[in-house]
Image (cartoon, rainbow, N blue to C red; front, side):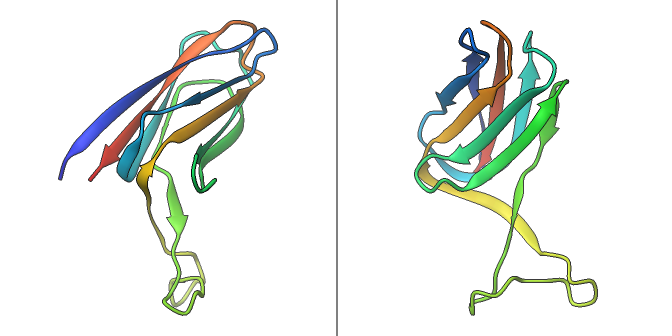
Length: 123
């Protein structure tokens, strides 16, 4: 198992917004680290796979650095949501990327503020 970290720096425009991209990635998204340098409190971000638009992590009103291990719901071969038998809770698994970039869109980050996202991938 190989683990790699990709650091994506972000600096906002005057209106507090930013859109940045990771390099091309292949493998499973293991974790995403939000590193707050001086972004304003209450920053919103949406992190997706560029080619498919699949949501990797979306959160509003974030005030502090955070580490998340995003997972997605799985499905049976019939296309039906896979659920735990007794509770009806979704079965989740890692998000796979195949030669895709991670797109990070920020809003309300403050004028010319900065931070970074560390994308930890496993192949």
